[in-house]
Length: 121
Image 1 (cartoon, rainbow, N blue to C red):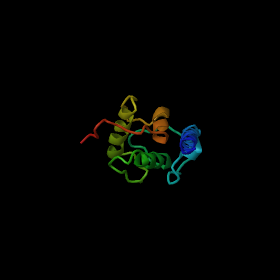
Image 2: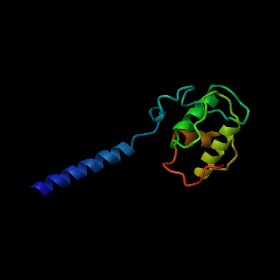
Image 3: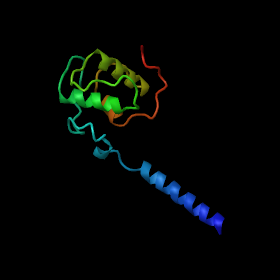
């Protein structure tokens, strides 16, 4: 009887875990504190640009794995941000262009769990 309960409990926990992983990653997946632009707005961004979209990318990169450095949320795409974006792109197998394009936005919103590339000094 006890073994049957444990098996049932284990099956229920596995099902709950799988259902949790199957939830679509739409707007609800956006970290609440990163709401400087709409989650569907993903303009191409390059070094030197400024504005709310840059601030959104800075915020998302700070949430991303908690990796240093934490970027200042100033809306300026500067050299520190460029270095971090290139690193994030490399971690996801993207060309390390430093340009935040559609694929880079995708990984900012839905990052890999881990990166084994050392952060550049």
